[in-house]
Amino acid sequence: MKRAATGSLLGLALGDALGYPTEFDDVPSILATCGPWREMELPSPAHITDDTQMTLALSRALRTATGRGALGPKRLERPLREEFVDWYQSPENNRAPGNTCMKACYLLKTGKPWEEAGQVHSKGCGANMRVAPLGLLPGIDDDVRAGAAQLQSALTHGHPTALAASDLTAYAVRLLARGAEPMGLVGLLRSYALENRTRYREAWLGDLWTRARASSPERFIAHGWDECLAVLERLAGALRHANPETDPCLATGEGWIAEEALATGLLCFLMFVDEPVTALRRAACTSGDSDSIACLAGAFAGAHLGADAWPAAWVERIEHRDELLGFGTLWDA
Image (cartoon, rainbow, N blue to C red):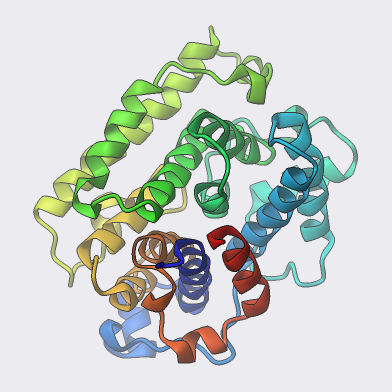
């Protein structure tokens, strides 16, 4: 048993910690500080950022919601709001959190309906950097996974591309955890995007589309899927001509926005399918949002290869190790 949930959560946190010190630097500066990228070492202590903090917040909310019965929009929204507000107020929330998450969580704290708190014009990667647990949670079907992935995005990032990219990220993790062939992954994601291009999940999203002044819910959500399809095309082209020594951000984007974080995280993983630590190092040595790119690359690699993908010495010193292992054990069981 490969323990995909444990592997994915650990990979996510390890990538986050490896990319934390390099997030706002360009590649020459990273190389000058860290040396050759293939030899980058995990910091000690290995501190995580808001990426892993919010992943754990979503994990706790899912544990609470599923403990009360079948997962649904109302059952998820309340504990998710509570966890996001707790994160917002935590003294540990000092790891360069995103402005959108901070603004939205402040509004959630004041009691605003989530539809008003979520920033409908923001498609920052804060929505999909944290969504991996929904690809790992057992006992839910694809419709529930998709709806929950989009809802957890909408509480902070209500832009249709943030919704679609979150859905795609969770789906990619689920496919890899269940044994999908990595080299066929981009095609599967493209097919999924085309199938869902005009499907607006009203049960989960309510009237969110009206807040973007879209002409219809179908046109609202199609915009997000179209942007994801475009970046998947860029990813497919990048894989055909991949040069591991070139900054991946040059091919698929710097990762500050949701669809580019997904694509560049996937690019780093798919260039090194059987070398998960090398994938993390490549992702951390990028000119963009290095911690989020490496976080996603780690989630994909860990879902594919399982818990044994990661060096024991790295796992021993990752922050929040016990909680990550706890959720991994729960969901792998």
